[in-house]
Length: 634
Image (cartoon, rainbow, N blue to C red; front, side, top):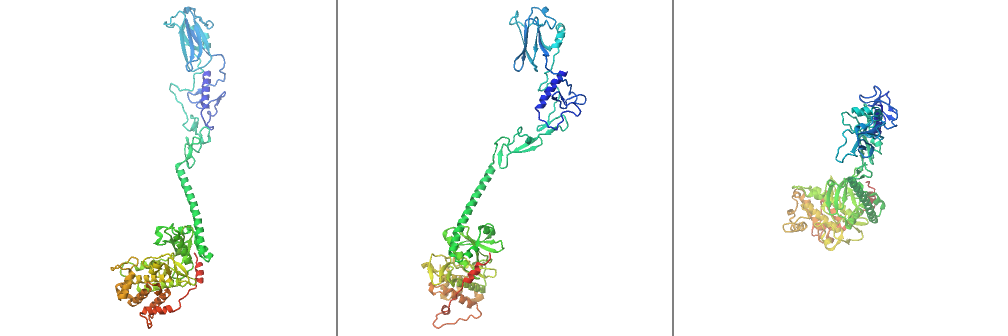
């Protein structure tokens, strides 16, 4: 029994050696032997009462198992050979041959079992199972069977020495020493085994004996080449952020497609941002050079510069809901500056060199003007191919908007007179500049803005030109709006201050008739101006006049029409100056509308205009006004 127990302990020790376990698991019950020799005894096994589960008690025998072989192969019979084989490798373990002619010759003791009717052989190697190969020889024929009295068995050497004769005589069953019978294999009979669940290690026969294995702390047994996260009974091995694949395999994680997409977008954004930045720098350098080349005072230019980021923020990225209107030179957006100023920001619709020149020209023109009747320029942005212009915000639309409303009535006649006077005053100021006469070149009702009090602000100076005060005009490319365009300028390309006079008086006719010069065509297929001149010659002004004016101020309307007719002469030299037009409108609005008739004059209008032309034209000093404009806060 002791040998059996020792063999069991050796087997159990081998099993425990390959099973991971927690250092906190007790190897045996408290107060019980924990080992037998160098073999650990884990619970439920144990030595002694109360140290093991029922059926798991062991006897510790520290005697060595080494010594003479305990088993032997015994063969009895005549002419019989037995060979003992390892069933797995078919290796010969032991063999012996018994030779005789009759059973009576068989010896009855161990010493005489030496080949005559009986043979024996020691078995040195302990195996779990053996194979036996028997054969006969001598007088036996190939087809004859073995001696029926022959026997082969494995037995204990000591027992055989004492009981050989009895075994042979009585046919008793011999015992064997089973010191190798317990192996690491399953059993064919009932029983049970207890093991920890996957991911746990320790002693399953003890309460809380199975503990979670921290796989992340054992990288050699549980390799992870990513982010290791221990979990009860298992662990997670994840690829690092932005990668995907098998993190348990070296080199198994690669950049994920979404990450590549994000990286590609980021790189594209950075490249685009860098390109935009370089373009901003290039445009700023080019536009600033053009601007400073034309501006006398460089300090003014520096103070008027906005960044593109400021204007994008002010307009919410040029949101279409902030759009105020569009014209030939660009689109205007409403913007809010950080200092709470409400501004109008004009952005070009096209990016040709002419637009750049026009925008720069407008900056130059408006930076030199400080008049209550001219829209004020706050500054510009030079970081785009075509500069962006920042004006004061005029909230009440244009004269065109107010004239051409649905319904029978529009602006009252008195308001129309005052608006005409204020616009004439602003244009006269431009024409009477101390050093340079500024010709607007695109006077029309859509470029006359009105604030909440219907006060005039002349706008859109992109087409404007400066003419030295000592010159009467310049030859230039034709610009303006058909319907308002001076026919003499259109035919000769000669631009003078009288070109603005003609366009302004087209606006006067528009105010009288509430008809748009750009789209109106009469039944006689005549334009608005041609029909107006015809009705003036026929004395039938009422046929073309706005019916609202007949009841509100027919007398002044006729004088207003006479002034407009005088300004619409096809020859520029026959037209009055803007200063003369301003003075005549002042008289129409004054308390005493007295008109003196000179001898030799064919009409009252011609006489009055002659008197006006003999007077000195008013000159404006722009130096002080220019400095005032430059210091206006952004």
